[in-house]
Image 1: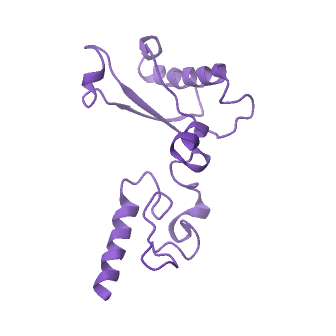
Image 2: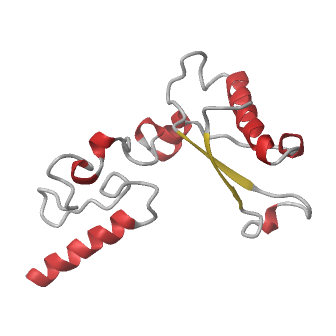
Length: 154
């Protein structure tokens, strides 16, 4: 049994139908809480990467038998890859941990949860702001509301 993984799976076949043959699919796997630094090995080691991918596929096999044997290729972005390619510190797509110490009035830090900053006209609207990443567009919408309120107050 493959345990200790939190996977999000999406089949993007209907969107990217132009890049594969009929009967094939393109999927996206998002594995949350993948460590930046491993207890053993390195993300630079192709065998470690392959083993991790196989572990993810194994978990899908539990719900969709035969999935692993149907994979014809894959690409993997580990936390260090995300940091290097997209500038995400620690490879964290949420711009910081989503722990109890960094949510609600503490996101991104105490006193900064209202989207404004000490710099006039500069607002926080990304995953690092309340309500955090994974809530599609909520920080941006919330920050835009504050910007509009500030503009009306002038």
